[in-house]
Amino acid sequence: MSTLLSIADIRKSYGALEVLKGVTLDVAEGETFAIIGPNGAGKTTLFRVMTGEAPCNAGTVRYAGRDVTRAPAFERVRLGMGRTFQVARIFPDFTVEENVIVAVEARRSSRGDAAAPRWFQTRPRADVRAEAMEQLERVGLADKAASDARFLSHGDKKRLEFAIALAGRPKILMLDEPTAGMSPADRMATAELIRRLRGESGLTVVMTEHDMDVIFGLANRIFVMNHGEPIACGTLDEIRANPTVQEVYLGKEMYGAEG
Amino acid sequence: MKPIHFLAIAAALVVLASLPVWANQGVTFIVGLALVEAVFALSWNLLFGFTGMASFGHAAFFAIGGYLCGAGLRYATGVPFLALLGGAGALGALTAFLVGLVALRRSSGIHFAILTLALSEVLRVLIAYSTALGREDGLSAIPRPAVNLGVARLDLTSGQSYYWFLLVASALLAWVLWLVAKGPLGRVLQTIRQDPERAAFMGVDVWRYRLGAFTLSGAVAAVSGALYAPWAQIITPDSAHWIHSTQPMLASLLGGAQSFWGPVIGTILFTAINYATRTLIGLSEIVIGVVLLVIVLSAPSGVMGLLRRFESRRNRPAAAAGGGARVRAATVPTPAGEA
Ligand SMILES: Nc1ncnc2c1ncn2[C@@H]1O[C@H](COP(=O)(O)OP(=O)(O)OP(=O)(O)O)[C@@H](O)[C@H]1O
Ligand SMILES: [Mg+2]
Image 1: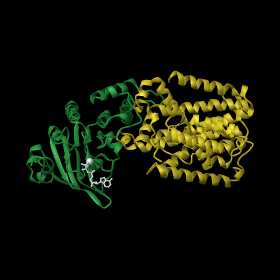
Image 2: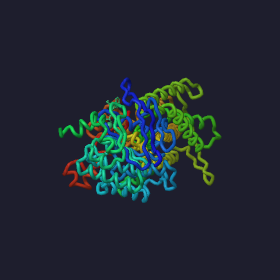
Image 3: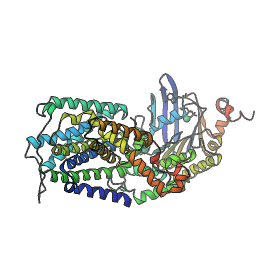
Image 4: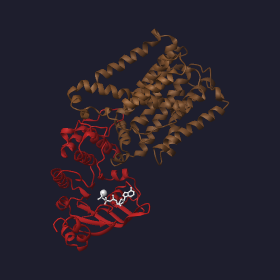
């Protein structure tokens, strides 16, 4: 398997606070890579640097063989990155369907698709709408297509954002806590959805998550960080057996309740 | 388009087109000014209500177009009128593009607002110092043109014929803006207004779209100024004054910035208030102030928001009775822009 995303020695400070203190990792094509760590470890900040939402102070981000460290977010998206936010961001003034329609149209026009919308055709093309509905069915929101997005529940907003990200047909999907704030049933459904997508299209997934059941059910490899520093990286069993990890992370959150 | 909307637009066009026949010259003149201001307000609201950018110096574009056209008609009598209109649009677009290159680099919020305001005031002062442009007095006695259409020659020197030309031109400009705002471009612009970062993560080059929207808006504002000059037959530095820049803002606020036709409704209401209170000096300001206050406090999405709320109540009485949650978005106050 070839490396799709690779970051080297990433450093990032917010003012005097150094949040990432030299993070290096590689994500192979087709794998599901989980980044875990306690609250404030710097996971979201790492996501921001990898996706281009925020610049880093030092280090490099390479994607599909290119150096994208300085590339703005929209260029990385055009190269095949897709993402969701820790707190779902959708377009509240649009209906659920419109949210996905704009994402489909954005993909088509930014990739010079022949079926890109023309400026004077005010209605979305029929095939764009069909594609949007297909994505909504995938995430189980088809019955809410006509409702205003602002009135969705928190979990539904996350699913809608998922559909927006998928509408970009990403090669790599970056999910910042995809199941946060969801009911246990919704969590399992989302995990199932990710598993299915991965199977269907060989999607590469990078995700952070606090729910260990979701992580253990999905991840091929796990990257553990604390205070902006990597602690360990490896398969599920390797991580479980790692004494440092048990101490700083799993020790507290996983086994704490038992002992 | 819903039948009722189509009917409303058709009725408005019939009333406007027949106006010179049944209304007196004074009223026709005021309605002509309102047409120009309505297009000007639409151009501003493409930025504010759709893209989420507030230009506080939009009158500068109006003045650029107005002076170009006014000076052209007075001094360059050989240049066809349609070329002057086109030239005004091109100059407005170019100015907006250059200003946007600088002003939109870093932000589009308050910096953009202040920068556009400052530049428009600079322009106004420059115009007021320019002898060729008539200094403080402006350019007066601007002749109304004739338009050569190849097959026919339209003589617009009479007030009536120019009024009809103005109506057709305004309707065309509104139609183009409507296509942009309601089509795929407008949808992208609206994603930028709602959440530019989320838009970027769909692959949208936010900066380019903002620059494009500003360029188009500047072009249309300049054309509205160019249409104004031969109608009023005078253009003064006041056309670039910041008070004129507030006109489209107030109209959009009153009519509803989230709706495409909101600025037009707002302009109509302002014109009506001004006309109804024309004999009592100062009264129009008071009435406009009170109306704005009432609208801002009771209907943050403007008159169009009220109408839409009314419409969805009638269409879905059960939903309205069962709580506001299913009534359309217009009932919920949202900040339309960043600034
Ligand atoms: N914009 C910001 N400005 C200043 N400090 C920030 C900013 N964003 C995050 N931080 C700080 O950086 C550190 C890392 O935050 P980050 O959000 O990356 O952690 P996280 O691992 O995603 O945590 P969580 O599990 O709670 O989501 C925290 O101490 C946080 O307070
Ligand atoms: Mg986080």
